[in-house]
Length: 279
Image (cartoon, rainbow, N blue to C red):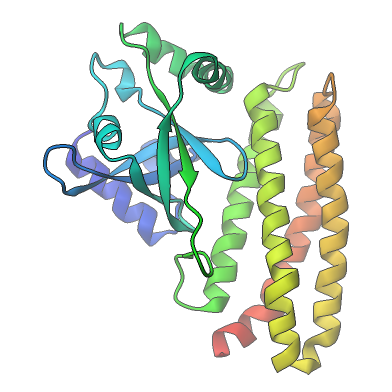
């Protein structure tokens, strides 16, 4: 896409912590920064992605079905360490081009979720690459795109809200079967939520309990809610990993999780954001 269009999307994405309108509204989008193969300079591009587990996302070098690979793909072939901005987080990642059956399986999932990928492949003779971006572990806390602890909690919560809304929309559009990529989306969401709540249980809540003992009842309630949500997450996992997953059952579990999680996130924000921002 033209550079001026890309820059508008980049600016909006960063200003709104991953939320954009227009052409990309409602899409799963990241900003991918690669190092130019010839120039050595960083280049940032908005790219659609597919969730694919807790430690990686997939991007597809379709270039809209153009005859040549997009520039960002050539860049990561030369320099496979890239920077990913998800809206909530910024992190370094290692790019790995999938091949053989792994590439074909991932692309089939993508086509099942959005037939537009197949249309792009039909327009070109090249085999459209699928690239896995593996997050590189770092020491210390994650790089959250926020200026305070309170804002960090809100940014992460809103990212979960957006992803769950997308999953609900995908569930509503589904037919008599539960698509493979939709199942992966659900499992990836479950893993991310589990990791977030575990981090709060072992770090944030003890930190607050030590400095604000008057909030013990609030923290106890939040911990109990984590346990209830964990049970709902496990129910959703079972629903989407059954031998013959039933879409109606999965939709019901998503709705139950949505109701409980939204109430939990709202209560946590009401109780904790004021003291976190004050700190």
